Length: 359
Ligand SMILES: *[C@@H]1O[C@H](CO)[C@@H](O)[C@H](O)[C@H]1NC(C)=O
Ligand SMILES: *[C@@H]1O[C@H](CO)[C@@H](O)[C@H](O)[C@H]1NC(C)=O
Ligand SMILES: *[C@@H]1O[C@H](CO)[C@@H](O)[C@H](O)[C@H]1NC(C)=O
Ligand SMILES: *[C@@H]1O[C@H](CO)[C@@H](O)[C@H](O)[C@H]1NC(C)=O
Ligand SMILES: *[C@@H]1O[C@H](CO)[C@@H](O)[C@H](O)[C@H]1NC(C)=O
Image (cartoon, rainbow, N blue to C red; front, side, top):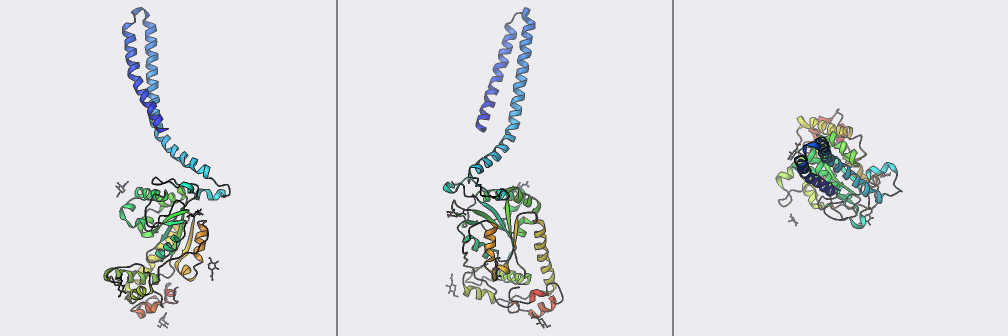
């Protein structure tokens, strides 16, 4: 279509000089007697020229509009033959039939794909949950794509990155075969997500992206994990390498030996900040299709993940991860100055964090 349009423009442009020379030739050779007729012809020619000019201009302008409409139409057209009448109308905006630029989906071209984003915070179990989800043959979750600063510089780069991901053109170890039925990423709230939340919500709703919140109830446990992770990042306790996640009990034990000392002056501020961040995120994204999951609930009941598979309309499967939990004891056994922490939180709304193994 585009090619054809350009051809037309070119032939129109070529006609112009011809028409002009013809006209002058007519004017020069015709005798004065037939002046009125000649002038009529000249005027007619002029009108035609102007008409052709206007037509070519409007064609050029419409070309852009047309281009946009065309891509839309292409997407619609591609979706049509794949349309599955058993899919309820309400679900249709969330099912896509991407056509990757880099390969052919072949026999899976009509395997509907759901777009998702795991919205979470550091040290909230999202690494673990993501590996569990990626053990499903139809799920491709591509990690913390926006940990790279340039990709989240502004909404343009964010949109471009998401477009590539959701078009199944993103390469990562999580990339599945042509039969991917759910594609997404892990996105931390502090990776441009809150900063650009309005535009991102608009994008999610326009493109039918579902949000999977993964939050942690016990923010004190999360804080211990942050401090311990920062410590390991500096000390590299496992044979000189830093590991944010471990795959064996031995490694977990080594990392858990470190007991952070918590600054009681900043503790409450820290907890308030992360509490507010999570609460704000839930408000900001409340108008998207979403589900909220708590890390503690998944730890105590792995079946909770089946709710996510339901949410993504995927077949139920047993999900596996090699991740081993690092801090498994009572909280008081993981904090060096427990007495300080205990007295700091007593009587505050965070007091409940002190109790329980995992809550
Ligand atoms: C999941 O992937 C398999 C092949 O890997 C494919 O046969 C199947 O149709 C996919 N299931 C869904 C629900 O897309
Ligand atoms: C967005 O960020 C990219 C990369 O940092 C930059 O090249 C581009 O000019 C920026 N665009 C806008 C509209 O600010
Ligand atoms: C790290 O050291 C432990 C002993 O402390 C050893 O058992 C293990 O094999 C080492 N791992 C690597 C990757 O070198
Ligand atoms: C575990 O989670 C599933 C899914 O949410 C729920 O149906 C089930 O009742 C839960 N089991 C327990 C013991 O809480
Ligand atoms: C906190 O300290 C009080 C004593 O001041 C003690 O009774 C309580 O058991 C402590 N809480 C925890 C969770 O250790």
